[in-house]
Image (cartoon, rainbow, N blue to C red; front, top):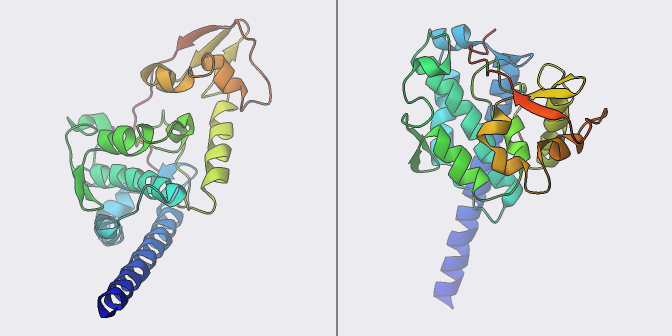
Amino acid sequence: MKKIIILIAIFGINSAVFSQSTAEFFKTADAFFKAHVSNGKVAYAQLHENPEVLDKLVNLAETISVPISDAKTYQAFWINAYNISVIKGIIDHYPINSPLDKVGFFDKTVYKIAGESLTLNTIENKKLRAQFSDARFHFVLVCGAVGCPPLINKAYLPDTLETQLQQQTELALNNPNFIKVKKSKVELSEIFKWYKEDFVKKGNEIDYINRFRTEKIAPKTKISYYAYNWNLNQQ
């Protein structure tokens, strides 16, 4: 009986610490994005001069552990962790004109998150895409470039994640600079080429896009892809 009581007490303490740490991470991340992101652009120069707040957030992300069974908290954590890591990678090599200026930015540079050493590609492909069939991730994971859907000035939170995913996807897919409709042709971001399998599970790319568009695209519209803009998304 004593052993059971001790185990329950330990579990309760661990749960409290976990909840507090997760809440602190989301609160800190939300304040960070509000202070350093505006109109989808990041204040890299300011952060480079004063990186302490970013370093605090990165260090906090290293200590968090979120079970995949808590799906919304898990997804929100890893989306924020990805976006924060992109900013950290840029600040570590600033000034640069593009994330591609750093060789291996997405597939070689390692970040310590949730007790693991991970690349950006690993976060995107293993922690999120491999675990959940939701192509909306592509509209909230921001690669540090102008060609990406814009970074919002708030954290993704468990309670608001569904709304945020929906809103950002609708904004991107109704944006004429992102989905370029020209009479019988439509030019798509190369995101739709690189991750095509995510968008064609229930039809083709146009079927997917039309789920979120106010003005639908004709089903037989010819698809092409415009060149990705890798210039830095800086203020």
